[in-house]
Length: 100
Image 1 (tube, rainbow, N blue to C red):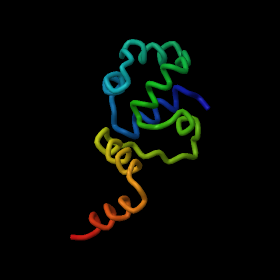
Image 2 (tube, one colour):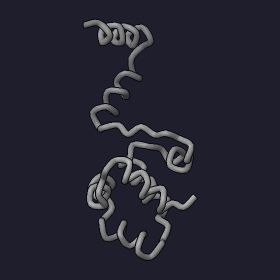
Image 3 (tube, one colour):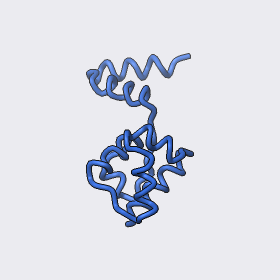
């Protein structure tokens, strides 16, 4: 797998510019741009920042068969709160959400 191709693929899937990826990951746009210009593979810490920006794990990044779903920060927070609930409270919340 070509890491740079994967970064580009995920960026385009989200409709992000290189600038947006820079903002979301905390990596300077010049650094990201230089990876592509010089065909340099990013470091693992940089890849972790990229994955955090995309809301995916490193395993998902390298699993090209994975159809990753990108979550907003709010959606991610909701899932974290949901996972902290007991099974009964999760069921009650799902029941509440399914009623109109």
